[in-house]
Length: 341
Image (cartoon, rainbow, N blue to C red):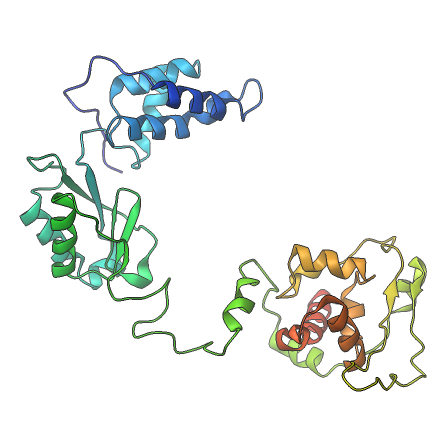
């Protein structure tokens, strides 16, 4: 990375405001004795915020003193992380992404706008309102090209739309952040084309976590057609409560579900429970609910019949999600990959 140096002109002193000093004490108190230096980055960040968006040398020294650190230690941190601005910036500081996705979609045009409206990179406009620098990826590649201005991101930009944003901010008017093409998050240009069914977006909120790793195709194919077998004999050591499968599922009165109780444990298995969260659609809360029902093993879920599914559905008010998310086939696939199926 390039060498980053402190500004030639520095203020004589720096001290946190009483409010920020109290906040800083709270940050330092989060860490155990002897580890208070871990608060250095949040304290530097708050110092930069207080000082108009850039970090002067007296602020670095002030933070070093609060944490009983050598000044050079804190200076090394401040000069390493590009989130810390070492020279004055405008009230609205533009970080323009020039990495490949943004460059391919017109970042050079945005740079031309910044040069024309603000000046050269690192220059602060005469009224102190605007400044800009080029930075590496800001993480919104799907909505390129984009810039970050202070704490907000502006995406799907064109030269004209960025010029309007800069004009509004320079004049003291609000410029609403977000996509200039009307996109939400990283949906495709032109709007959503998949997963448009009603209710699916609520379902996908439950999947924002690591899930089942991709199983080999042969294992998944085998698991998908595997017979639904009861728990292995070794599973019965924890006194599972087993339904009598010789009896057909009862016929319910009109309006009620026909249901059959699945195999359940009345206590956690002595060998330990499986990590049911590996099944996509099961998070910590649902896993806890399944434990309350006596469900601890993939083998239990893999053995569920349609009546068993109805039984669980009714008690947890899942409204069919077990089938929609394919819990049974996922359980078979996990067991096949683990060599337990």
